[in-house]
Image 1 (tube, rainbow, N blue to C red):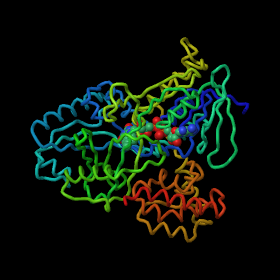
Image 2: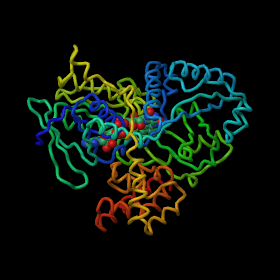
Image 3: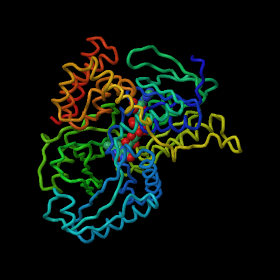
Image 4: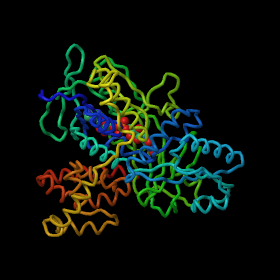
Length: 512
Ligand SMILES: Cc1cc2nc3c(=O)[nH]c(=O)nc-3n(C[C@H](O)[C@H](O)[C@H](O)COP(=O)(O)OP(=O)(O)OC[C@H]3O[C@@H](n4cnc5c(N)ncnc54)[C@H](O)[C@@H]3O)c2cc1C
């Protein structure tokens, strides 16, 4: 076991775990974050990309949840302005009753955001609705409602949280899986770690553990105690990405009631349109879940019902799928009714498990998890009195990001390595064959400081190309692999293996 004793080891490098690492490190705790794959490889790269209070939870009467999420929305837009933006949404309505009902709800939504409002909710005439949503089917629309929410790049924010945690002293390890615990008198004092890219295993000593593993929560609970009750009721959601020509303009559309009683969004994102999502309970937890044919049909059918175009699955550039770590409730097993609030459990071993919630509320989840870890492990600063003030949570106002490190490196590289040096070769030209603003320098920076270890890491979560256009990602993969081979010192066999596995994976993002 290593000599260094971490105050807190966090398992899981998604929104919740990276947020917890920022929280713990910025309070001054010795913090280790481990992620079995790439940061944000799980659900946290597969969201609808909305920083939102959740308008549909209003209909369920959960005002507390909505108010808390709206406060977090405001904080995130303030603390990470480079990765977030305000997005206008239009809700088309088809009767006077709908107009009254939805406008009352959306006005309340704005009121609940208080000083952190992103813009006033407004009623729209039929003419204005058709102007703001040029592709809406004009036949039955009688008006609309305009409201505002936030939008972000989920995987990129995750990396920026990692940078923020490191800036405050955290140690972070991707491709490192927690595979066992070392205990004394039933209390966890160490975590056994496996290098999932084939390196050696090690055990680290710690005073406390936070389990932030999303839909994998139960496997960590049972690693700690094989008899532990399961918590998670996984629910799958898919998104279809299409060309912006299918849904023109800057406004997003919110369809307030689908056939299964959910909401469906069509949101402009990175010059494309993201349409989703679904809510399908799944029994199996897979790190790369597959879309069901009926889910694709459901999304296409609802989108086409509201627009004047008829898109088919051939028009889809990419389909991405995520699993919600919903928490079981004794009263309901219909996943669209399960709480989106987060749940925290402290095990006898003193492990703190945090799950549920949503991206928007990651900071509050992290704060709650770290507060509990500090309390149960009696870490420095726990309890009351003057000594505790030094370890208070400071993330409400903490700027998120690498403070320009990636941009600085990119600027240096342009001069030294790229134009003058070894990267001016045939693969550089290949970039121009793909109509996306991805530069060689982006791959190099991603490998040197943005924790890229595989072709997939770059194409799926640093550039987002796999999510935006899976066929283009496949075309660009060989050029990316060439650059990464040099950066990460791969053998030819390793490079070929990387390419084969990426291309196989990318096929899953194409609707066949
Ligand atoms: C379809 C869909 C749409 C959504 N849209 C939105 C939205 O628009 N806005 C919003 O706010 N929220 C949204 N959410 C919710 C949000 O994405 C999730 O709540 C959030 O990403 C969960 O983050 P997490 O860190 O808890 O889990 P994850 O992101 O899944 O992270 C858990 C991590 O733990 C790692 N792990 C597991 N086991 C181990 C181990 N043994 N050792 C090391 N690491 C391990 C996994 O690899 C994984 O990366 C959406 C969710 C879905 C499914």
